[in-house]
Length: 512
Image (cartoon, rainbow, N blue to C red; front, side, top):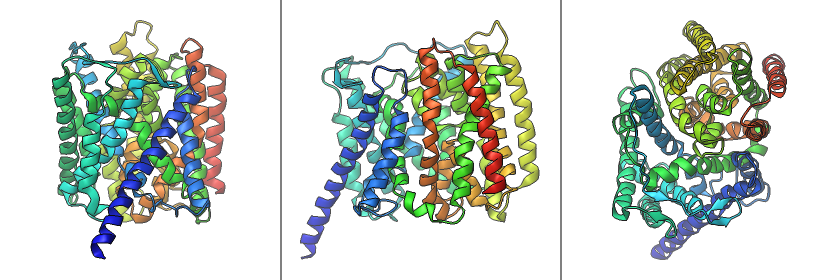
């Protein structure tokens, strides 16, 4: 009987694996189909489909909030760090190329097949999306096996999941695409899997090592290591693993997160304090995004998407906009600039996470450090706005100015926002959730998900983070209009949305 039960459980794992594949991948493909032929980002649609799917699964009685009945989907939602490691590595390469005056390798081992497999997605792109799904599961399961993490119901199946995910990702290569030096291309894919897994493991141990001094989350160390490797190997030509995760890693992770978040809609709306988190998060999404763009447009005299999109992605460590940029949805120049503009502002997270970790230990925000960091942010913001409007700016000049702006605006957004929230009735844990949700901040999201503010916040962050993504129709609609307008953002709607967002966050702090 025991052997029979084990066989049934093994079949259930395979069912979970396949069911998750058929939930997540069509979600990404449909989103690309809906925006096919336009300049809009498919992440706009992933938000809606993901939340709807999670809500339907719970409201129909198929699953409970958190999707414990779909453990593979829940596992996908926790692979944020894997997708970001690739972004950080590419960002490190761009840092070295631009500021080190280095010329990177132009040779590409993969020439895409441009035949459409489904409307809006070529055959090669479809393979990259499916491969990302297998990679995320395989690498996450492998790292958990090595680290000995066994708190999940899937723990005993991590080895087989690692096998299925990694083997599937290695053999999933588009046979219709032209591949130069096939053996080298495949070896690169295996090497990249090993390196990403190694970064996850090393970051975990470093976070544990410094935990007694300051509770920095592992995502911070993953950023430092991946960026350093990118700067050292600035001329590395991507293999299939990096190619897949750079193109589709963040969309697949977001699809999982939104599905899990949507499953908690009914539950969380009945929870005390949820309204204030969602209120600040919703209007914060509008203010911090469009307020930042308004500053760049009014004082910085730039409306170009090549500046606004990667600049705001870095200034907010913004998950959705980063994913849209790296996937190429907002143009080639934005795609090239985004990894670096995300990386360097992320370096100041040593201050963010250390101050928040100490604040978490005492149960309230450390006000003086927060004010100091906000002041530093204001100085950097002024410097960035002054330099971005120089008429003779080349790529290097624009990037330098955007980095100054990104550092400054992120410090103001995080610490200024937390100072504002400290005047509300919210506790620090809910305040951190509201802040992460209000700027779609992937670093703070990953830290809360890892348990930086306790188990309750870790369980709820996926929902609050996902719900405020409903503002993204405004964000991606505006960027879509800009792409259709010769890649120039219209001014008046941005200014109006900035005012609406500012009034909204003030009202949410006072009245909710």
